Length: 218
Ligand code: CO
Image (cartoon, rainbow, N blue to C red; front, side, top):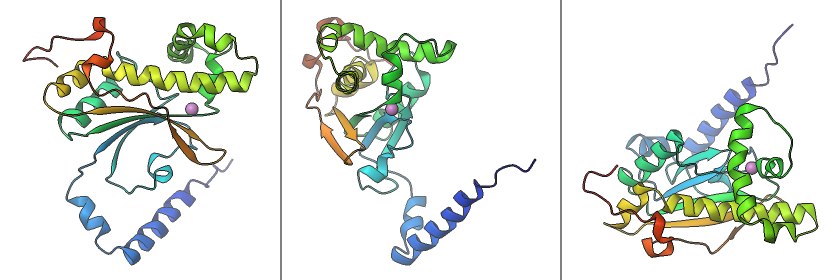
């Protein structure tokens, strides 16, 4: 049986994009080869409907991006920590944005008791912890969609805190300004809402999570 060849449309699309880009901005690719100086680190959901550059109307080179299922900041996730370490210590980004989205499949999946298989269960467990932390508020919301949307927001707020709990972020705060923001995107209207849960200093964090940063801290 022939394999589906639709993936070739992506390569054709790429050629058309490159040509159109060169026509309107002849120096576009030359400039990209000089390196990147993004000011923002974006931690978003892997959902195909939440492309960071497109929904913020930004170009290649402007946002350093990490995406995973339900935009989680898990303190044992080496992939995320590497991205964070590089963005903060090498690229010197000034803002980190955690952007969730309403209707997030990962969040909805975490709200029921189904068994999704080993690794998915472990990942969703992090969202269940957020639910448990805010169960009083969430259980009081009768409508399931409204409850899921509130969990999407609370999940973003907890991930903002999780970033602040890392020594990478706390070490940066000893030397310079670094703000962590929590946003939610709605693909019903294309609008991003700022949840106003910004953290930019150690005092915003519960004392138990504040490190006395050592000189050789990693
Ligand atoms: Co999602």
